[in-house]
Every structure is written in structure tokens, then in C-alpha cells.
Amino acid sequence: MNNWINQILRQEWDTIAIDTLSFILTFAMITAIFILAKKAIGIIFKNRYNSRISLINKKTSPQRIETINNLMHNAATYALYFIYAYALLKLLGFPVETLIASAGIVGVAFGLGAQNFVKDLLNGIFIITENQFETGDVVTIPQEGITGTVLSTGVRTTTVKAANGDIYYIPNSYITIVNNQSRQAMRVLIDLPLDDDMDLNLFKEVIGKITREIKGEFAEYLTQEPSITGMIRGEYQTFMYRITFYVKNGEQYRLNSVFYERYFIALQEHNIQFPISTFTP
Image 1: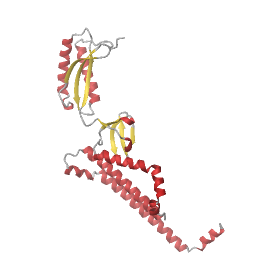
Image 2: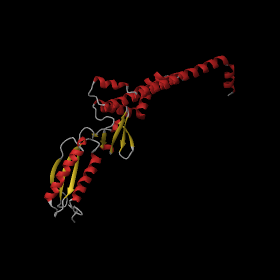
Image 3: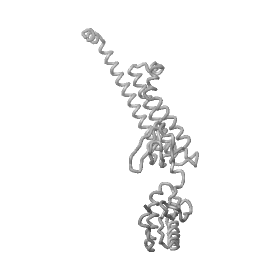
Image 4: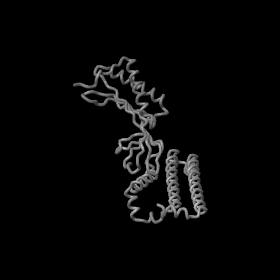
């Protein structure tokens, strides 16, 4: 201990002070550049500079541009953090090139999760290039039991918000099967129970009238003509009367409730009663 103290005391304090000041200034400069670069990246991608893509390809949807924007933003941020870490290690005197070239270190890195990172990265690239889904799409990921709206797709993870408000951060490598519910019109089935004693002709007349009214009132949400399928078999020797609508994606749950209400109110106004229970023991 005394020898160590004596060695320090024998050092030239001017040299120590200069080296320390140089280290502090270099560290401050590297950190300042990192902070400014991070803010610059945030500003650039917040302003969506890559929306110029839409000027080149008019068919590119705003959602796809947003998805690509998020992916590039994440990639740039990861690259910046890597460069910052590399610069700090060099400043501290670590033999970074030797560590990177070391097979042992590389093996440990892969063992600690680099393999999963590569899987996430590759699957994220495939998701974007194959246009499996975009920001704002409603998707179901069966293997994870998750259904919700895509908030963002990054280099490693995809963020999905469920209907109840829960937010899921899903590694891209976990997304092997996905059901994109936003790529086509959604079907709304209205199945009305039939009573054995009801006036079927009056029932059909009321159903036709309400269907025409719904068609006119909700035309902006319908993607094609409503279809009155008619009587179908239900459970336990019962019958149902089916009307089929195709609506814009995202409106199916709300309109399903609205349409049922319209039919029930109209039928009640004409004193058409529904069976108390469709279950017959």
C-alpha cells in the first residue's frame, strides 16, 4: 500500500492533471455528440422525412410509410447506441477489436441472447418487406393469443394494443403466424331466433323494410349489398333467420350491436315475439 502511494506521489501532477482533463473533455464531447445525434434522429423521423416515398409510389399507404419509418428509426437508434458504446470503450482503453475478434467473447454473446436478437431482426425485416401488417392494422397472433391494433413495428419487437387497453411488446421472432383483420371487409351476421307461432310473412316484411333502411342509413360503412339469407337451422331443433352484412374493417363490432338493436325494436313494434329460450331440454 505504501509503495502504491509513493508511486502516485512521485508522478508529475501536471501530467496527471492534463490527462484527466483530456479524458473528461473527450468523454463530454462524445456524450454531447451522442445526445445531439439522438435528438436529430428523433426530429428527422418525427417529421417523417421518408414520407417522400409516397411521392415516388402513390400506392404506398400512410400506414406502411409509418411502419417503415418506425423500423428505420429503431435501426438508427440501435446503431447510434452501438457507436457510443464503442467510443466509450476505446476511451477507457479496452481492446475492443480484440474482444470482438475473440471467438470466446462472440460465443458468450450469442449464448446471452445474440441469436434471439438476430432472429428478431430477420423476422422484423420479413414482416416489413412482405407487408404482413402495418401500423394501425388490427391483427391476431394465434400462438400468443393476442388480438389488437399494431402501434409500431421495430427492429426487435412489435407493439400491439388490445381492445381492453393492454399493450404487448412481442419479439418479432415469436410472430410466426398472423391474421391481419384489416385487409378485407368484415362480415356481420345477424341471426334472429324464430318462434313456431310467429307470422313468418309479417316477419319477413319487417326484416326487408329494416334491411333497406339500414342499407341507406349506413351506406358509408357497407362494402357491398346486404344479403338476406333467410331461414337456417339453429341448435336443438330451432330455426334462425339470417341477414348478412359486409362492413369496413374496424366497424364490425359497433355495427353488429346497432343492427341487432334496430331489428329487435322494429319487430317488437309489430308485436312479433321471440322465443323465450332457444334451448329445449
